[in-house]
Image (cartoon, rainbow, N blue to C red; front, side):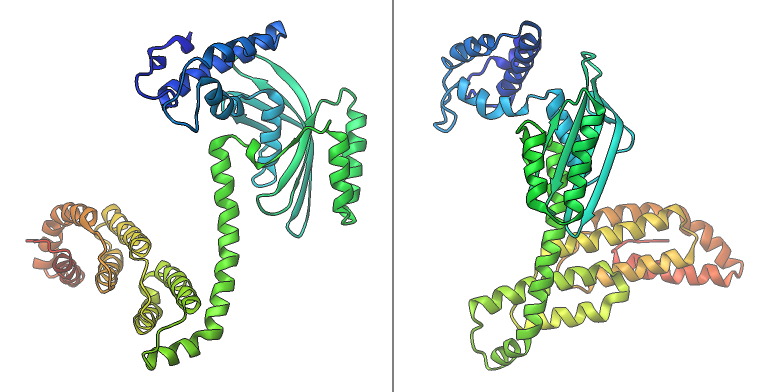
Length: 386
């Protein structure tokens, strides 16, 4: 029914998001029809008709091409679900029971082993669709090379003892460091049904890539910092002589100094000397600061301090931390957007100052100190308090 919705009535471009979504619905209908009738000819006839709809973009050609490129890879069956489950488990393991979108997974067996960056996962689980009720017990085996290279497969093992033998052989070969044998066993034991990181569902694919990139970029930044540290004296000498830096030196200093400054800024007010030193070095070497990234880090710190004060506005310590954080942000050589902080702080001060003022008028020294600090904060944020 969904494949007949009006979003399929395209007017300008067949590959638009609405029309492609309708073709996704049709693809699901085809998948269910082939499961019921077991006839691949249904899809073939559908593609013949779909090819008559033409795209205005040369890379998409027609509806049949769009189906093959954008719809067919997204079709999910239980083996693909099992592959997703297995590959994801090498990065972030699931529990004994998991819900993956409209599917339920009940783990039956699971084994994991690590050697340096390499990780091997084998197991069996029952995969069930909560919509159709379709269910199957599938075994999986995946080798993660520690980056984006992942390989593995899925297979139904009617005899659990047979899977236990395969799993044991894989872990035995992995344990002695025979990666070639592990790959051979994977190839021979899972019906050549090998999957990769591309087999992950799109949302988790992005999440896993973020994990991989975070680790990879951290290693790359470490190398860059080391290289910068080695050549920094020469860079300073060239800068002092007003000699143009070689392009490679500029690249090293830009990357290393911005990376180090980002880390220092995350330390907040406590890292003020280090931040000032890095900014001075960047100016001396004519390094362009990544203002947008640095501003985001500092702004989130100020907003967190404002939120903490709003939760407990009478706490002098929180007020002091907030005021120091604002001052730290405003002394940086790039603009930090504090309009949200101004709005929230105005509300916090408006509802708190009258009570503190009454305490100060009655001789409360702590209240007087609070008011002095609040006035400093108000001046910095260009706010008026009574």
